[in-house]
Each structure stands twice: as C-alpha cells, then as structure tokens.
Length: 629
Image (tube, rainbow, N blue to C red; front, side, top):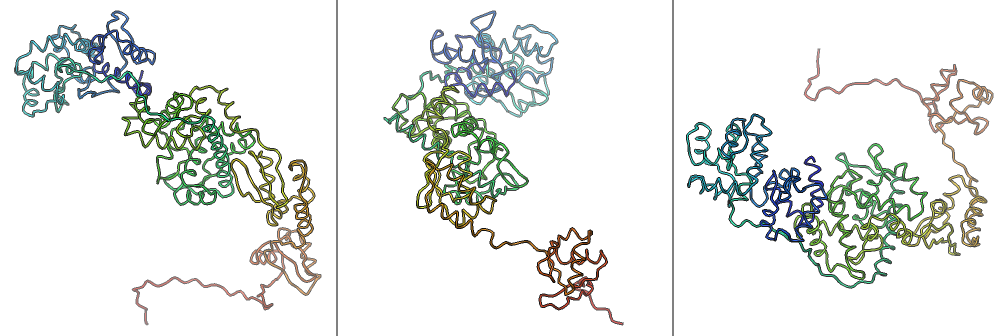
C-alpha cells in the first residue's frame, strides 16, 4: 500500500483506532500485542482494544503475523504517522540512508544476520530493534555515559546535535560512548548527510520510563435537546424546495447574462453581490449554489464567463425530486467548503478539498446516530463527535468548530438538517440507501405542477414546483414575482408583448395558457389583455437601415435595384425616389461605384458631402526645434 493510500485509509480511523495505529507506527517491523496493550494502558485481551485492532485489520493497515500471532505487522504506518509522542522516525526510515558497512556493523553488534543485501540488512536490524527486550538488553550493556545520553533523548528531543561530537564521529573510529550507541543501532548517524544523531522511535519507546499512549475507546456523549421529527422534516422539505428554486433561478440568470470570471479564477465578490441582489438572496447562498452547480456539471466556463452547461437543459426536463437528487449526489461528497471561504472568489468546481467531503459525510452519520426526536444542543457537540470519529482530518474539537459551522449551514440549505437534527434525507444519506433516498426526495419534492391557477388580478400561482414546460410558458408571457414553495407570475402589457415579440400569435398564446390553466379557465381580464395587444402588435414596424439612396430619376433607381452585383445591398423601395440599403453609406457608395455608377454622398440637409483626401501627419517630438533655412 503506497503512502497516499495509507493516508487515505488512516483518515477514516476513529480516535481509538488512530491511537492504536500511532503506537503500532513506532515499530515499523512489527509490535508485540502485549507491548501494544501495555503502551495503551489496557489488558492484552481487552475487548475495546480487540475492536480497534479488528478495524485496523479490516482496513488493511495491520494484521496478525502468520508465524507468531503475538506480533502485529503493519503497512508503512511509520511514514504517515511519524514523530508521534515526541519520538523520532522509525529505524527503517533512518537506516535506509546508511552505507552498507555501517549496516553490517550494527547487525553484527545486535547479533542479527550479516550479509551484503542492503535492503535485507535494514529489515533485520529494524526487526531486532522492534523487540523492546533486545533494546533494553543493549542499553544495559552500554557505557554509563551512553546510557545517560540515551535516556535524555528518550524522554526529550530525539536528536543529539553537539557539533564536536558530530565532528568526532565523522572523522574518527575511536571508541566513545556515542560511537558505542551508534554501532549498536540505538542511535543513527549518517556520516555523509547527517547534521544530527537521531534516536529511532523503537529505541525511544523501549527506553522511555512508563511510556503510556492515550486510548479513548468510549465515544463522547454530546448534549442533546428534544425536537419534533415532523417539524424537522417539514422545514427540511421547505428548504429543499427553496434550494431547487434558487439553483434554477441562478442558472437561468447566468444563461441570460453570463457572469465574468476573474483572471485568477472564480467569480469575484462584486459579481456575487450583483447576483444576490438580482435573486433577492444573500451572498452566502450565491457562493454556495455556484459551487454546487459547478461540482455537478450544471455550469461551466465559456471563454471568460460562467454560463449553464448543456447538461442544465437535460436537468430542467427532470422531475423536481430527480433534479434535487442530482444536486444532492454531487454535494454530499463535494471536495470543497464554499461557506468556509468567505471573502474569497466563489468557486465553480476548481476546489479539491478531500477533508471537506469526508467531514460532510461523517456529519451525516453523527446526526443519524441521534435518537429519534433529539437534536444536538450546539455545534460544539457535533464538533466533538467529528473530532472523535475523524481525528486525523478534524484535529481537536476546537479546531474543527468553524468547519462544522460551515457544514451545518450547508445541511440547512440542502434540507438535510434542521434544528441540528437529521431530516429523512440525512438518514438516507448516512445509510447509503439509494431507494430510501429516492423515497425521501419524492416526499420532500412532489411531482412538478403542470397547471397553474390564473386569477382576475392577472396573476398566476403554482402551489408546487412548476414543470419546465409550464415555467417556460409563464416566463415567456408573464413576470415572475416569487419562487420557493409556491411560484407567482404577473401578466402585464410588457410581458405579453414579450411573448408576441418572440413569435407567438395572440390566438396561439391564449390557447397555450388555457391548456395550462387549472380547470381550463382563463380570466376575462387576461383574455382581453392578450386580444387587445394582439390587435396592436406590429401595426408599426421598425427595420434596420444602413443608409438610403435618393434620386429624382426614378428610372435610374429602378435600374439600380435590378443590378445583380448590388444584391448584397438588399435595396428596398421606401418611396418612388428613395431606396434603403442594408449596408452603411461608405460601403454602399463603394459598391455603386464598382458597378459603374457615379453616386455622391449627401448631408442630412440635402447638400452634397464632398470627400476631401485625408493627410496624416505625425506629431513632432516635444523637444524638437523647428528647422529654419
């Protein structure tokens, strides 16, 4: 198992499991079960120790030795959990940098097999030092001065850096207390690269008097309070519906006006605030939903701007429960903590913080472990549990409080938690049960509404989540006034005209609205509004014109309209003596001249605009003197 993989697995250990692993890491070649139990202050057959070891065995970090069940072997825990309890690095780590002859000398003094295989020598010396009895036997045989040095290093800093002593070791083979300890492997000195003499963790653990490691096999019991499970789910469902509406609105706004991104990446605070004002929400919500949408592939980068992705169109076609399920799947293990990064640019999928994902998932397990009808009394209690369940990632309870506060706010926004208690969504996520999650999602977000209640005050009300087709119709012909648990639109002259401008005829619009109306009823004021504007729409039309051609010679204008080489001017007769051209005046003049005509430019007052040649001149240098003859 490679070091990154070891770290990945170790990050999921609980506090007692990590404590046992830290003691095991002190002896890279293996640890006797009784030495582990003694260091942890429990009996060798302690059930809680057995449970911690079983978790380490199942995770592949440790296993009983096949030849001697009294020994526990491990992967390279010493590389990941180094320098625990103030000890130095494990012997195998230090020995690998020594020359072959140094290793042979140490193996000989320890009574271990001596050969010429460097790797084998490191292994046999490490195995010898892993046995506390061997270390203590060597210590008793050491010179008194060496014993004093060894004890000082065992209980204090595991490094000896006296410059004179280092120089003597490097330049002379003369016998000395330090030379004796180095030759017997109780201290490690690299004559070529060493700036200090180090004590391997195996030696320090064996020589430190009454060494005891922490062992906390019983989880803490944070205070809890009584809450109503029905109220928690009700508020969670409301939050989920509001979340879905927020994401939809945000992405639709980004689709209408793509949001610029900073050169360094992300969306700046000014743009976040602008979106918050447009959506009627806070900056925290915009920051969070941008990150969630980005992590779910619903938005992406188009040049130097953020806009919805093609997947957003597919997402819009889903039922509300499926839409929110898409968001929940991406959010739950999202490697980012957008609410912990206040003041920094909002991210759009560029953050990769594995600790956030692990703690977010663990928080669900903590909440789900609460008894029905109970909620955590405070964030501190949740932090205590996270520090116990994931100590390598969370640190201590005080350190993880800001992260827990940010994660809890995410839980509230997603409808996964309320009143520091789990909703049905949280229970399903903690259980990893896809069917249970789907059931909870459908309970929180019923099927989309296909009809809308039209009222005489020209408003339309959808009591649930409107379908994509219904939203598209109403957004086309009416102005949305609210979102969330219910959505409201208002028909106005400008909104109905917007539908006509998009190519919808009055009769067609009325038919579509009647099909979407509850009971097929369209209030008379709305019918009158559509019919009246429909009669007026297009009575005056506006066309883009680049310039006009004017001539009293109507036959000449007729001839010009028929010239094929001038077709690109898209000439149209506005009056017998006036033609319009789609191109600007300069391009139109050039085209006419190329066709053999001799047109002239004209001022707005009807006088000819003469074309004088332009003479370009460069400015003289500021200090230049005029030349005089």
